[in-house]
Amino acid sequence: MASKSGELILMSAQPSYFKPAPSHSETVTADLCIYSGVSGGVIAAIEASRRGLSVVLLEPSAHLGGMTAGGLGCTDIGNKAAIGGLSREFYERAGRHYGVKEEWRFEPHVAEMIYDQWLAETSVRLFKRQFVESVTKENGAITALKIVSGLIVKARMFIDASYEGDLMALAGVSFTVGREANSVYGESHNGQQIRSSHQFKFPVDPYVIPGVPSSGLLPGIEADATYVPGAGDHRVQSYNFRMCLTQREDIRIPFPKPAGYDDAWYVLLKRHLATGWNEAFNKFDPIRNGKTDTNNHGAVSTDFIGMNYSFPEAGYAERERIFQAHVTYQQGIMWCLANDPEIPAAIREPMSTWGLCKDEFVDGGGWPHQLYVREARRMISDYVMTEHNCTAKAVADDPVGLAAYTMDSHNCRRLVHEGSVKNEGDVQVHGFPPYTVSYRSIVPKKTECSNLFVPFCLSASHIAFGSIRMEPVHMVLSQSAAIAAHIALKEGRAVQDIDYPALKAELLAAKQVLMWTPEMNQGPYQPN
Image (cartoon, rainbow, N blue to C red; front, side, top):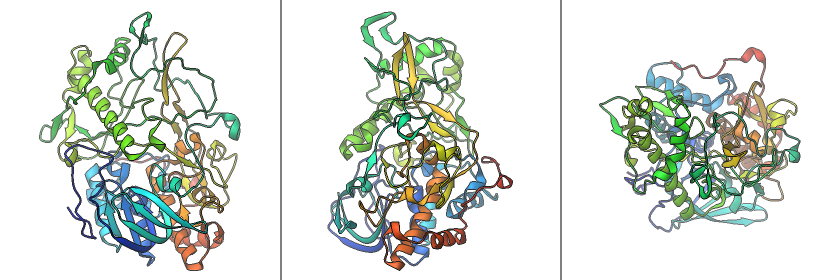
């Protein structure tokens, strides 16, 4: 398979994180370089190309679309009316594929096809399997990127659309990883939290030999853990794969038992099920054509809790190790639920009728290529989005889009608390309308970098980021970043110095939604 620029894209039968393109020495130049062809990166590239800019798009994987094409087909958005511009056009294009006005629950391969075809309508130069290695800066501005493959990209403006924030970090921009203490920004939902959602509803023994602490803890449970409500720490919310599953016998692949399967990781699951918990199928959310977007649900599920702490700042080889550990764990839990005789028959027997889809993620045997990196680095710029923005106690007066989802953090760790195992870090707070996201939160401090936008790993507290991070919003903010980049290039200004009223006029002309009123309410996605 070759991209528009002609380089060979190598496919793998096993999903992987780090598989760089073959070495080659080439220098390419452009007005704008976008790092990462996830949903927002593709949208930014399309917008910039439509505006006449020359664009280079670098995608570390072999696939466009990130999580939107990586299994998250049941769109997370609190209110559809908050989504405008090219983000809304994506859902309209998905609708046209299925013969309806809009589609918010779609198959992964359809999402990737839309991004591929849409990008092919432009003059964007796409390079896949490209991982940034280093950054060259002059006078506070990025001038070039060196890629692991040997590729050099020179540009006047840059967008880091990635989930990890690697370009941002290499450019010397301030960032944080983990959870702030509530005291940092005067919040109430940040830091360490033991709550009732995705929690053990009944006591479950954490020890290898029940009741015998000296036997040691089951895998994944922290030893010597200290719990201080509201305290900050290094932990990020857990990752998983959003699986596309089916019961259709014409395309069903039975759950594979992974190499390295270790039953010890699933003892806790079996003990949890023995308490009577029976909600294993509660997040098999239906999408088109008899398939699902299957997500984490409950105290022991597909989230690999606590096994991702080093991922945000890890090198590529270490990320590959973490990626494969997540594959092994999650394939293992699905095989266990469908096959292990210790699983209650009421769950095991129906689970065995489900499986992966042979027409999805075909180069990974039906397994998603994109790990759901829910949170990694977060920039620290002149404006930090916090829970006060989510709840309208603070309002950004320079909006580049609206966010609309619950303040949502998945669990960050598993520990022994008051004699039994508990999950910690899950927060789900809703009941607020869409709110504005500041332009200043997607650009660095001027003293750190004057020609970079960061629309995903933006400047936000852990809990506010948990609301903003949704895929439709990533597309919205990335389009706004591309529009701002065009203005900055035309005027020869630092991204921090462009005139906001002029930007606002361009955003509104591009059909971005920048203000919320109750009469706009459309509710969440409405599946056909």
